[in-house]
Length: 468
Image 1 (spheres, rainbow, N blue to C red):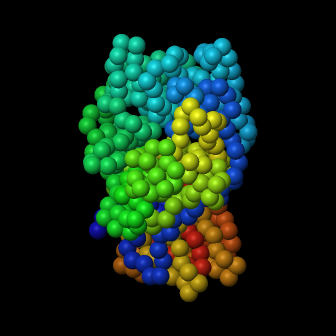
Image 2: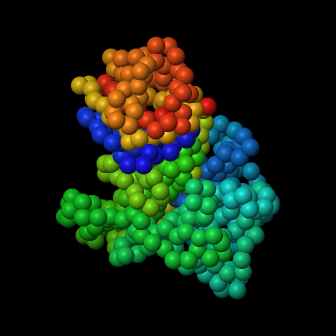
Image 3: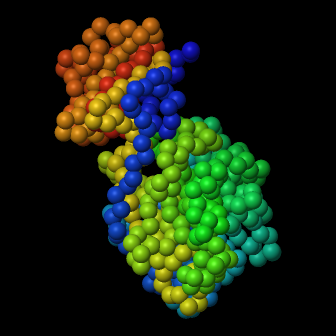
């Protein structure tokens, strides 16, 4: 078996690819802390019905920026812009681009009422992208000359937008379409909706943002999703959106936060007083993770973010925003929560609905390799690293520990790097340097194929990385 070159790249656990053998350890999905903060609420005339589900968030030069979806009481839909210094309190600045019923607004697109549904806003990291187009936006849009589909717009500042082409880049796709430049493969990728026969997630790969080509289904409901449904309540389920994102701190980790949509049977929806009984049901946010953006793992099917208590502002439907913010030892995620289910609303009658709120996870914390109280261990496949020290992101219980040993290709521990030589790690560390008899230096093993042995008790290992 050829050794795997990991260099000095951060290694998370999107799968068991790096694992040669394991005993009493497993990959576990970790849930975020829900802050309950009402970061964005519907309060402006152009938000008269609700703040929408299709939002994007990122950090740019020390400023947190959000592009959020809004729907007015007349049914018109808009992309609005807000900024924050702390990620909690957001300012909706009047921008002077669009007046709504005579009131200056924070709307950035479209500049007049038309058929429109937001997709994502992203920073284009393609080395060939000019700074004047570093912000990109994808959206479902009908132009003045009647061309309808998924368009791509560019901007130097995320506020002033121009189309990159005189026609759509892709067919219309009724969801929060996701697009970004994937530096791992040197191409753009997009995650869109495919109906087959219900909602699935498709992926396009392309060099030119003006032509997305064909989509391949990469994520779907399956028999396990359907077989467990209570058929007296639900007629089926599918995945409404993807909210897929490439993890910025690792080359080969992709994350997906699909909203699982459980379809009420018509009679059940009517019993619950639904305003659209043929297309109604609750949605919560699930989680999938991938090493390549194509093959996705669902280590469990429990909600990543659950619905709130009945009657609360998060009790009906949840949708993850695109993007995440890395802030110190934390990851910030934003999602929209509603007190109504998918179809139980009236645009004109229901006023100022929806809350965009924040969830917090530890750095690298989506999944972890876990051992329970009885302990366990795993050995990696042969690896080649570059660096002089090994750093781990780990959390042990008060009585737990982590030890790491280094073996040659024959499975023999290298002198000075046995499990007993390793100083036990006990505690909760985002970045802990591993030492053997007090010495962290592994430079003599750099560039040499080795296996790592992790011995754990009541511990969670989130990631490891060799550093120069």
